[in-house]
Amino acid sequence: MNEPKFQELAKVLVKFPSDEEPCTGYVVKLEWRDSRWIYQISLPDEEIPDGSWDNWAPEEWLSAAG
Image (tube, rainbow, N blue to C red):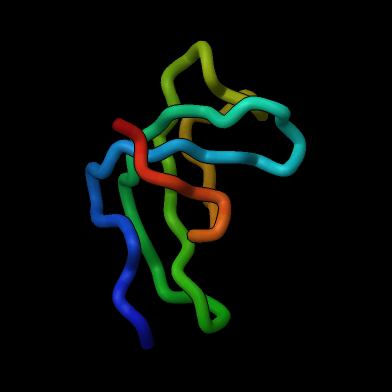
């Protein structure tokens, strides 16, 4: 198992496949599942793509936010 790229409370940009622009959020939980890291992301109200506060995203959808 490799080390996760992001830790809890890290600020990240999330590029959901259904959205053109990335969303800014925070990692609230991470899990090793299906041979990869996935992250539960908390998003602010104005950036919620599917109407929920918490979204799971694989590591390849994430990048560091400044």
